[in-house]
Image (cartoon, rainbow, N blue to C red; front, side):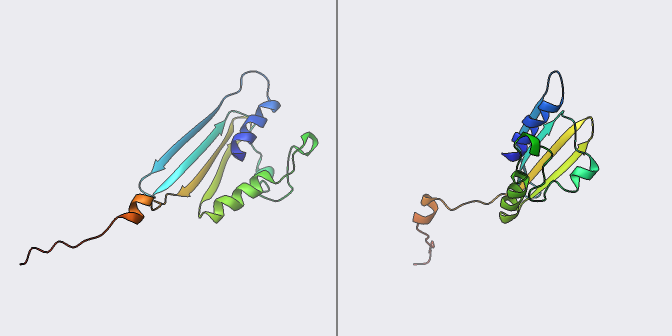
Length: 122
């Protein structure tokens, strides 16, 4: 959710029409779910890029930012064995990709299934 919020907030820094894209996909090769947020905002400078995951670092402190959004998001994603990757070009925009491992949860149906062995010998 935080990358979507950040993409929305990036529009405050530019004039005119602002677009951002959200896509959700599955990578069968890596068995990962992908959430990709791209914007056409101001982009992220190299200096800021090196610090965006630090707690209490924000470029929006003057507008109510706490610097905890991406830090907490990254912690949650890592706790679930995932990763968050940023690619950005100042003046062009930013793409944030969240990769989470796909895990099939056992359903109630799976837990209640009886297993059996067929025996054709009589």
